[in-house]
Length: 232
Image: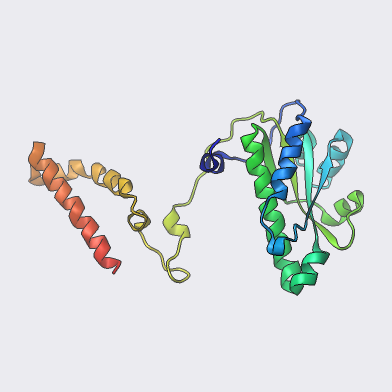
C-alpha cells in the first residue's frame, strides 16, 4: 500500500474477528513503532504485549468497560520511560517530549496495522493508577495509551475531514487563506468550482458553444489573476 493511501484510508476499528494475529505481524508492528522519530533519539517508548483474554477483560474493566479491549486479538500497552528524557531535556522533556515520542510510535503502529490488513484503535480512557499497578509499571514510567488490535469485523464509515483552509495558517497564527488550493497550485479545485457555475453563466446571456467556453475560461483566468494579486 502506498504511504499516502495508507494515511488517508486508515480508520479506527473497534470490532474484531475471532482470529489470531500471526506472530510475525506482531513483530512488524513493534518494529514500526521502534522506527519512529524521538527527541535526541532517546526512544523512550516501552510496549507491553497482552495476549491473555483474562487480562484483556481485566484491563477493559479499568477502561470504562470498552468492548474493543476485551475482544481484540492483542493489546499493546504504550508506555514511556521518562527518566532518560528528563535527564537530557529537563521538565519540558518530561512533560512534552515523552508524550510526543510515544505518540509518534503509536501512529507508526496504527499505519503499519492498516498496511497489514489489521484493524486498530487508540484508547486513551483508562484508570492509569490501577492499570499501572496491575502491569507493574515503575514510578519512572507512565502508560500513555492502549492499542486494541485484530482483524477487522466492520467497515468503518468515512469520517468528516475539516477543510485545509480551516486548519492551515500563513505567516502567523490565525492568518487564513480562503482558497488555499490556489496557493498550492491545485487548479483542479478551481476548475470544479467554475464548472458548477457554468449554468449560471449561461443564463446571463454569454451564449453557448465555443463562445460560451471561451468566455467562461476568460472569467476563470480573471479570477486566478485577482487571487494572485491579492497574495502579493
